[in-house]
Amino acid sequence: FLLVIFFLGMFSYLIPIKKNRVVFSMPRNRYADNQRALYEYISSHHPELNAIWLYDDNRSKQLFSKGVFVKRNTLSGYLACATSNLAVLSHGFGDYGLYYRVVRKKKTLMLWHGVTLKCCGLLDEKFDNRRKKDYRDKETRFYSAVITSSQIDAYYTAAYTGVLIDKIHVTGLPRHDNLKAKEKAVSLPFKILYAPTFSAYEVNSDSLFFPFNDFLLAKFARFAEEHQIIFILRPHQNDK
Image (cartoon, rainbow, N blue to C red):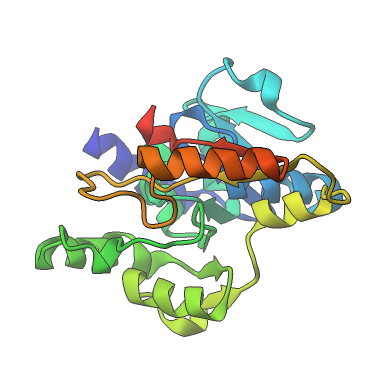
């Protein structure tokens, strides 16, 4: 597997890059979040950028909007990735599977997949010195640009990625912009979406942002009913 990744990366140096080509990909055949919002915007408003989405199989193709979708692990998928000038990331170079080394040599735009509120990357207590070094040397040092939602978010992103602050830009997130564009006048019932993040280790206390104990949950339910609020909980995909 590692040899395949290595040779695909080395051979890609021989393939000419097309200046106006942007490639998108997500792990586990996902088509969502910041990548989807940016991809659909570019496809609709900037066709000259020749955006291409790499997918794994046909199961979710019915979800795809208009655009160019290429099956990832095919010759066409490899060439689409190898000829692109810019690769867009949500989690890391693992978004591209076998094309890890192909993508690393390109201009890379890291969108991340939310507003970071927990200790991750270089600030994660589970990262020892070697893991921190690998994270910088094999991942974040190759980022050309990272987007964030605020100046505070930018400083935090610089801290947990080790990316120079000059490469971090306060733009807001594509997914949020997409929701804002679809926003209508507020009407009742008022809907609140709670979408907590995921931690790969045990959390020994109630959620910092919403303590789900029985007493407060019942109290909140009464409050929501009195004020015509619909409270929606969307678990993290890793909590399924």
